Length: 124
Image (cartoon, rainbow, N blue to C red; front, side):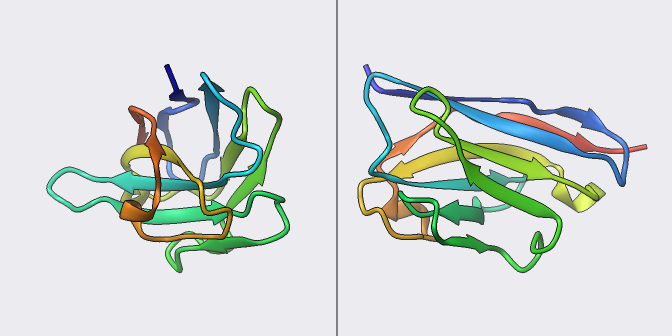
């Protein structure tokens, strides 16, 4: 069974940092593009960041550019999301996703596998 499992979420004060991980099992995602999305209560799922299969290209939502960094890991943890200078508006459930198309993608329907999400809450 193919699974993606996010971890690293939690409660953090504004200005703080968190690092999200995405653990993979059931298959190798080395040839897949990987992405991060988030969904806040009452809002649609939105794109956060993505990285190509090679790690050579990345793409960010304007709202996180300069604060978040997406990077590729190993076979067991194919993608990470480093989040710095967190704001209350970053509060959401964060999902990692994998796309057979190895290019950078920002549309949820272009992804083939999804994790269950990890909660990130930014509050004082």
